[in-house]
Length: 214
Image 1 (cartoon, helix red, strand yellow):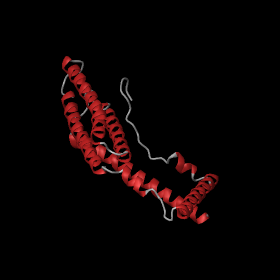
Image 2: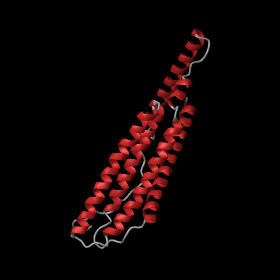
Image 3: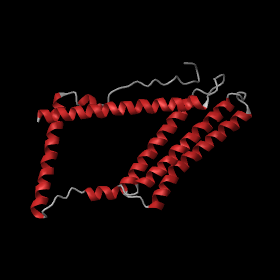
Image 4: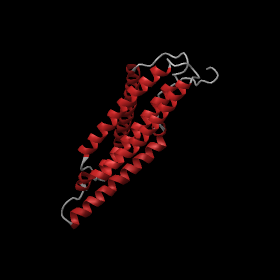
């Protein structure tokens, strides 16, 4: 690490707090108790519905109503992901132009200020346009929440990717190509999906163990 520069980030895989807690026997016991309470409450509600109305009322209609318009949400999500690809291409162009401009020059300052202003405008539009489409199309709560969560995920991905790559673009740095940036983000998404799959697999195994203990 040299003066005035930031060291490269190191991403290490680690377990979540809940994964480590579930390795403790007492926490697994508490988890099993809550599962039993949930099953008892479900059976109580099911028996009450059968006795009073003669049929089960599981709320499937409410769930389906919440996710009405999911196709529209998927189209909006596809548009958001498309803008991130365009952003990474523009960022690659900015990085390649920046390393060819002399340090501490007026041209580099204008280039940096213009890039920062464009990035801020992009973030503002990325936050406002999907919300405006949600109001315009009248999406139901389930589809709206799904779209907003994906919006936050895209914002975090864009901010983290651009900030981490900006650190590498200094005087004397090699120019960044579009393929390098896209491949880097694909590797990050692949690692995130792998860790998520492992976490879900561990959770499923814990559920099977809890059922066995019960």
